[in-house]
Length: 322
Image 1 (cartoon, rainbow, N blue to C red):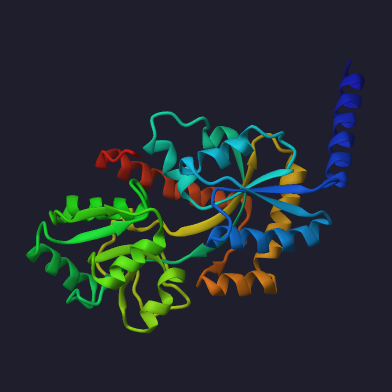
Image 2: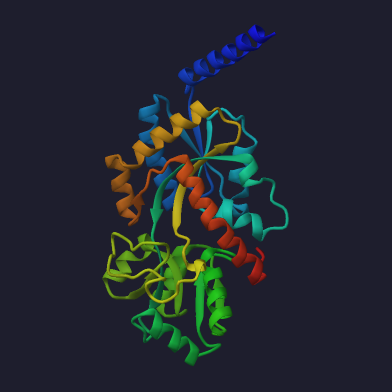
């Protein structure tokens, strides 16, 4: 009986080894929860080209925008667990969406496996030049003096920018008015025009306006300052050390749970290498983002750190997606 068990185990090991050695034997698909032409799509295409070279197979892009990222995530959770269908995403579909909508057809911890956090994109609280504040302390004092009169924008109900405003209102009693837009560029345009006082916007979108003095960054979210703008303090350094202001923007790769460990390891290895390739660093520089190339374990740790914070923000705010 023992001999039979050992033979069976050995056979499984050989099968897994052969599968890993054969991977990838055909093209891979990157599923992206964004339309063609945007920042996430552009980064995904550069990443696909670099990883494809290393894996020896072409990687095609399947854009699935809409439904708060559900369509893209669902496509991956319904695919075979073989490493040929990979989700390239930002945080919202796997952190925000499950708590904003009453029924989401996936459970991140159950249905997905982490591969690598490829990059981080600094996100800032930025104000119109019409706002007479040079730092967060002055901004909060000004907003308190103009209670109920200050408006801010985000790229949708329940997005991080919206939740930041809700948290500031709740903890500081500011009664600021939220304006929802369809995209980050529209938020930046209305901050630029002075139609709204402030917004939470990525540095990649803001940098030209910041350099021209037309928009003023007050603080960056996350645990560290942006390399592209080291003079801008973090929210914690600016006096707001609430965990609500610690999440940062990122791009990461995930696959369906049950994907063989050897395949996950190969994807992780090539994603980490591709993150620091010259073409990727050039692409990231265009959006003022920074390469990370984390391990799967490190990526999961980042998720486990941010997810409870965002969940608490959503649940206590009462915000629901429209």
